[in-house]
Image 1 (cartoon, rainbow, N blue to C red):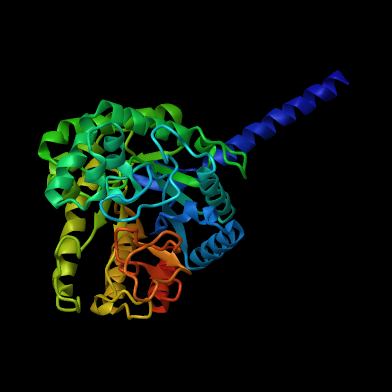
Image 2: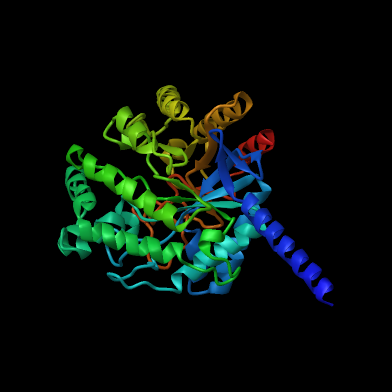
Length: 433
């Protein structure tokens, strides 16, 4: 009996060890400057699905879950295996003149709503079933989910009135740049970070830090120093937060969430410097031809040669830095309006389709040549949602889609009805295999 019990105990230990090793092998890792899963290269086409964790929190949670499952099945069927998602919004009410994302994880200062993370729990649970991976960004440089401006407001650096009005670009830069030198703001950010990282999933019963469906933690959506005077504090913040995450979570990758040199005060040196530390596992870039005035005509067609040339130059310039650092690079945001700059979901996507083809070509070439470009997350998936005719901006109670509340609904969203775009996505997802 004693011998049999010992043998049984030994087998149980071995089984537990193998189970642990198997789970660990499912995490996305970086080996020799490339993403891998179970020691195999991982190159992917992904989508921005920032609202995914909010779908089950609607008034009709059953309908929300149905939409979520339907959309995940649709994405998986078209080869999309990676989703970039907002982990939690901050504050409530009008911000910069528009409605913000709701419900918020932190609706009031240092008060967290545990029910909100149940939506993210369900999303990760369903993604895990489909072997999909999530990039979770922990806050926002921009106003549409509260983000840094809300932390500044809570700590007396910005008046309530300043949040409600729509600021000029210079005023926005002045306000947001204060975040990195506001010690209580950074501490508040850390409280939310800790709240998320120490979460145990309601459905899978897995701690987030042990969840294979999570690929990476991203410090924020497009964190910029915003002003040259904030650069040193910005670098200190990045170092502090990445070390904090790595001290809690040994399994997941960490990235910053930057746009490239355009988001780092036009400095290649700063972009390289902040991504050099070992705790930063990979680099990101975002590309926005409209926001960066690479075209101005409503047809978009006239501006496409410039858009394509500038995009290729931008990618090449940032790829050189990633290559130097020997780390993967993800093109994790890019988008283009529909033909004639229409917000109608039925409008054609001729120029957008050409642009997506350009991006996926860059990824495919990178895989075939052993390059550093490892993934593309287009902005953004809108699934079954549709813009409301005659209404430009999101209102409370509307379905979420790819365009955040501060942007025209239908501006950059890819709906499930965009057949020509999905043919391109599926084609390249198959070529990547």
